[in-house]
Structure formats: C-alpha cells, structure tokens
Image (tube, rainbow, N blue to C red; front, side):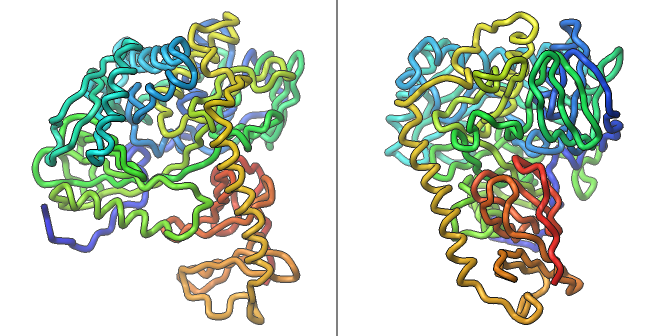
Length: 521
C-alpha cells in the first residue's frame, strides 16, 4: 500500500454535519402544553416524535443545542442488525426468545427507515449493502462461526464467508445480507420538518433541567416549563436519573476519519474482532461535497474505542492510529474529515427502552445503544411511541429498563464501577500532589492544558494559541469526578460518565446539565 504520507489538514468536523445545513428552530416559550414532550433531538427522539404525531399526538421536541448534532451527527451511519458478535452472547444470556426480539427490532428498524425514505421521497443516500464482521486473527474464527449459527437460528440473514470485497485477506467473517447505509442528518432533518407543524413543534437551544412526573408531567427547561401527558427522555444519557443509569452503563469514545483512496472503495460495511475494533464503510459523495470541492467516494475508517477513564494514550494519538490503519490497508490520497463520538454501553449489552423507573409514571427512556444507535435508536423510537399510544410493543421485553440480568451484567457491573471509583479516588490523590506557580500556569505552553490545585480546589488550565490562559473548575458537576484534557479536540472530558465541556467550561454533552465554573487566576 501507499508509503507516502503527505501533510494532512482534515476538516475537524463530522462528514454528516459538514455536508448539511445548520438548523434554526426557535427556543420554547414557558407555558406550552402538548400530549408528549420528547427531550432530545437525535434519531431516537425524532423517530418517537414522528411516530407519535402520526398516531394523532401533539409533540414538542426539546433539544438543548441544535438537532442531530450530538451523537447521531457523529455516527458511522450503519443501518444494520449486525452488531459485532452479538447474538451468540444474547442467546446464552437472555434466551432465544428475547434474543429474537432484539434481532427483529433491529431488522424492523432498517425496513422502517427504507419505507419512510421511499414513501416520503427523502434524499439521504439510502442504499442496501452487506455487513461483515471479520476475524482479526485465526483464533477468532470459532467465535465467528458460533455467531453465524446463533444469528441463523434467530432468522437473521447470516452466512459464514472466507472472502470479502476488502483488498486484504481475512480468516473468516459473518456476513449479513441486505443491510443498509445512509446519510443520517439528511434523513432526520427531513423527519424534523414533518414533525414541526399542525400543533407539534421542534425547539432548539432549550436545555431540559428536570422532570416533574405526574398527571400531567412538567419538563423544566432553561426557557420555562412544558406540560405534557407523557415525557420521552431521549438524550444520550438520561439527565433525569432516579434509577441509577450512571452505574448501569458506561461511556466509551471512538474516532473516525473520512478518507479518499486511490481506486474504488470496497462495497459493504465492516467491523472486526480486534480490541479495539476497527470499522469501515464507503460513502458516495456528489455535488462537490468534499472538503476540497471534489466528487467521488469517501471511505470512513475508524475505531480505537476506549473508556475515557483509561490513561495512557492522548486523543491525538488515537487519530494517528486510525490513520495508520487506513494507510496500512488502503492507498490513501487524502484525509478529508475527522471526528469522534461518545457512546454508552449497558453492563448487560442491551439498550434501556421503556418506563424510566418503576416508581415514575408517564416518563420513558431510550438510551445505551453501545455504538449501534442507527437501528437501536430507530427501534427505540418505535417502541416508545407504541408504549405511549398502545401500551405494548412486541419487542419491548428485551429492552425493559427494569430487567434483572445478573448472569449477563454482574461481572461487568463490578468491573466498570470499580474503574469509575478508582478514577474518582486516584484523580483526587493526583490533584493533591499537583503544584502550581504564582499565576497557576507557569510553564504551560500555548495549546496545552493541565489540572492543578489552587486554594485547595482542582482547576483546569488551558492556554490558547494567543497565550491567554483559561481557568475552570476541574470538578464535573454531574457526580464530582475530575475532568481530563482532550488534546485533539481541546475539550475537558469527564472520565467517569462521559460529560464534555469546552475549554471555558460550557457543556457540550451530558449527563451534566451545568458547566464547569470559570475560575479567576
């Protein structure tokens, strides 16, 4: 493959955001009343909203920033029921009945998107294509074969193959036929336009702060209250958390590049069994959508998924490793875009979709999609709409947030929460030993950051390229963990539960609803 490594200046933005217009919906006004308030303007919230509206409900979608700009705007955009090597584990830990519910929900999600695209004429580059999970080493082939057997028993379109369209050999792979890929923002911006009107509204710049359950419920936002018979919490992490979701799912971060290669990109979508896994899919680009104005195909390549609480590798190195993987396997001409994404993984591997907790009526949740949110999020929106309008859904049992799965989750629950606890304690020991100069930033070069102690409090310092130092509290307001510096994206990230903040403390993503307090030097 190519040995040349020319200087690269990729656009630091997701491909999906860079190739679609920004939105400009108004904020909510105090006193609004609707049938259902949907908190979150990503794929789950907008899917629930359009299904609820079509069932005759009035809906208000409340988005803290701009719709489809958070996790949904930073995906690889695979519409597939193939979620790595998932089904053999599901069958053994949940049983065949619930594993089939999971499979059917995700297959139905693909069909629902395809049907809506066709019926409503949505131009979002939807196309059917095969999905592959290939063995990264000969030792993984047996797992791949077991996955094929389990998936076929559940009625999924799975087969074992030893050859793929990739330009390199694999030891074996599970192929799912007739999966799909699309442009998620083009699809969802069209959905939002259909939600907005006839008594239903989409609101942006409207951060939800709390929910008062009851008959009716009330969602408190920075802009005032919204009264609704039912509430759907479709944020990436449920800000309204009385059921301990912070202990039952944990964040992981992954990195993506959109590259142009010499030759034709391989047809299909790919994932491998390595740790961390690699992911690939092609994207046809037209109408001058490239960063440099060119047409043709892009190949999305990424991976490097990791827990934010794990030390050792800076964000910039994660991107370099993704680039090295791309150059090892393809003749890379240029890197057009780069971006990262945060996902949450439940301790038993299945999303939480349904009533948010056993003591709260009329409030529902959809969360924990573990990197497979395009189908799981679509299925979640469909399930939540059915639960509100019909009281039931044929797939709901496996996703029930109140499920008890000690066999599937106990070991991981203990491991993950021990990691969070270790981070919480270890960071405080480090901060106690930290030293600072007279102004709190001695020796800090432009573009760099550190956490120090000042007046007994941990402080995050960042010196921008002009030499100005920005100081914020280094304590995440969600549950008190110390934030860490993300050197590639110049953000403060919480290692415990995934909240992210700008260098001057504003919230980029939750579960935190408050920013880092600005500190005077």
